[in-house]
Length: 190
Image (tube, rainbow, N blue to C red):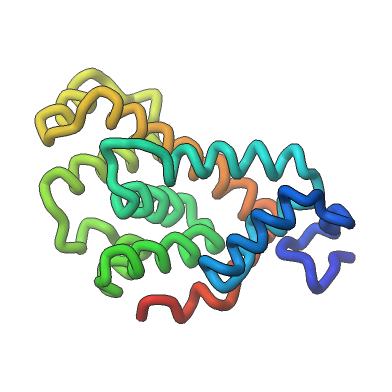
């Protein structure tokens, strides 16, 4: 039987007491976001796993890149929509709404990104992310060339593939563990 206070359907309580660095990270989340995202709470049963997850997430989503934060969030939502990941569609859909200032963009990313008003660059990026998610073994040089033709550098192509791959992994873990999005995400940037 799972714990009703758990962010997942699994009864994996957070380490108590949390290490000082983890407590500080959670305090920063509270300060900046008004909450600790449930994905972080879910991983806090094992601090090494939490640290590995946050290091990869922070590098991919917040680190230096030719992709904007909004573009990376758009990839996250499109991949999560394809994978039907409840947690990530809600959480990253909220991020797209907030970053773009366009609630309809966040909704389109979740429901059918092809209906969104997007630039040719964004369409090329999201088509590639979709192919990485659905049939990565079918990617060929022409797919990468399409990105180059849309203005993406070699490093950008790596970043698109990395964000898509990371979210495919995260989606599967979130879905398999019954991870629930924080209630605050539902009303953000509407």
